[in-house]
Length: 99
Image (cartoon, rainbow, N blue to C red; front, side, top):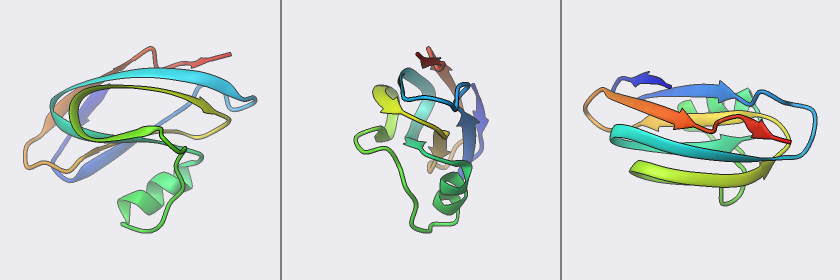
């Protein structure tokens, strides 16, 4: 949960980095945001730099104010990005890895 200025991103690491697990996330924001589930923080860094990065296939959405993602993951975390022109607040619920 947090606030993102225009053209800024944030990385939220999964709480359990040890096993394959299903993660269910519900996103809500004041303005459209983009989110990806990625295998590592270095993928977040590459995303922010506009470089090639890895993400979990089918585990993303682009420019939505509310969305839900359910995926199997093994490591990494959540990239949240605000490409809009206004600062936005966002909330992620059920954001813990479910073993």
